[in-house]
Amino acid sequence: MQPSPTSDRRTPVSDHTVPPRVRPPASGRELLEPPFDEPPFDEPPVHHAPVRVADHQPEPRHGRPGAGEPRVLAVVDGPDAADYTDAADYVAHTATLRGVVRQRLVTRALIGHLPPAPARLLDIGGGNGVQALEFARRGYDVTVCEPDPRMLAETRRGLADAPESVRRRVELVQGDGRDAVHLVGTGWDATFCHGVIMFVPEPAPLLNVLVELTRPGGIISVVGKNGPALALRAGLQGRWRDTVALLGEPSFAKTTETTGPGRRPAVQLPPGDDPANVAAILTAAGTQPLAWYGIRTFTDHLGGSPPGPDVDAVVDAEWAAGARDPYRGIARLIHHVHRRTG
Ligand SMILES: C[S@@+](CC[C@H](N)C(=O)[O-])C[C@H]1O[C@@H](n2cnc3c(N)ncnc32)[C@H](O)[C@@H]1O
Image 1: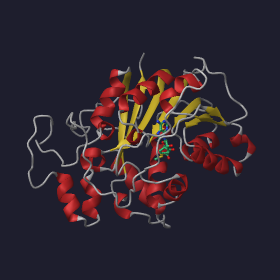
Image 2: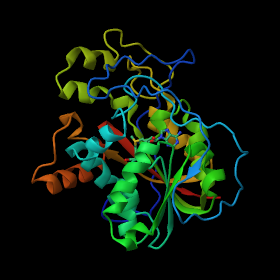
Image 3: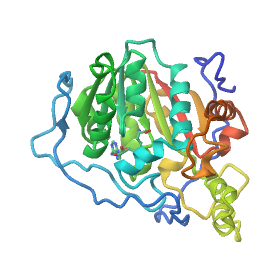
Image 4: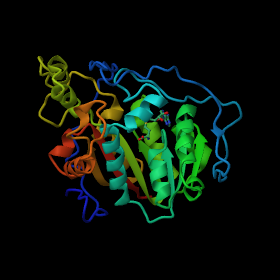
């Protein structure tokens, strides 16, 4: 069944058409795609204790971690891991057409699945707070759990321009998403984790935490890369050697590991970049898939182009494509929406 942007969004949909599973060999990963417009995020991991940075902070329901316990902020897992190099770069990215399309599609999908406001939303790795501000404006109470203090500073900057009624609905908590149960407690009506799983070496611990954080019946929203379609950007940009490499040429190595047409891209995908793997982990942790959407089918190759006057039409086109086959299967990012069952 297709997830429809306009009707029946709450009807569970089958994940059968999630792009076929692509397993990296146990020997490790070898990312062959050059970074090009996605420079490596090469900041070394930083260790520090979690810090609450908002004035109004609910008591965590599971206590705090031990004092002085080290925390890894962001794990770097190779080239092409990120759409940005630092917070300022990401802020710039969110203002591009690609950034705008991504954020607006995520918001639009979530509107169809979230309980009505006011509800308590948690944004793990909330970055510069685009979704937090968006949903606070819509009357939700939003907590951002984010390890990077520069990202939190950007969120604070955005909040400073917002009306008091919006500001008081957002709280910021500094810390790693994998520690979030201790930092912000459980029972959230919805938990977001958008564009974060590419920063952790193994997605399962983070995805399991997302489910634990969310109340039974609550919504889990995850955006990750669409690993099996990585060649599309290179092809549309005319980077033909990269395209061929990403498609697995010239060997067309046959593999028994895929359920697809028997070809594996030369890029050995991080497990977090395999949408089928992400959906399977969430489901095994106690969720049912509600819908999945493709993000950036038509615009992913446009680099840093700014949005033009036709931005609404672009978003509408991307939205329509992202909700249906075959287009969503070749989008750059996949947005998973699950409901916690138990
Ligand atoms: C590409 S940005 C996405 C920001 C935001 N979610 C969005 O969609 O605009 C990735 C964010 O993940 C954060 N991050 C990286 N590792 C993390 C972790 N282990 N736990 C929580 N957030 C993490 C980074 O600091 C960064 O703010």
